[in-house]
Image (tube, rainbow, N blue to C red; front, side):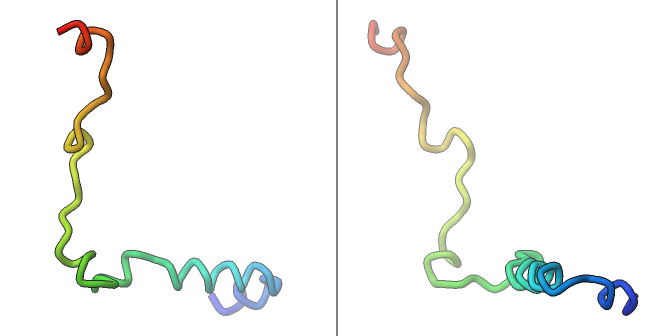
Amino acid sequence: MSNLSNNKDEQEQKIERLAESINPSEDVSPDSLAEATTAPLADDALGGNANEDDVKK
């Protein structure tokens, strides 16, 4: 496996390091209190868009 990293050029190695640094699966702790206490919303949690049928009612 070390041969693979030796064959990569400098830019490929930099991209790999950046990708590892932002990998969300490794960092399970929240970045802030807001992130820790906020629940993810469902797709329809904020409501939908008004359409003509809604306006006519």
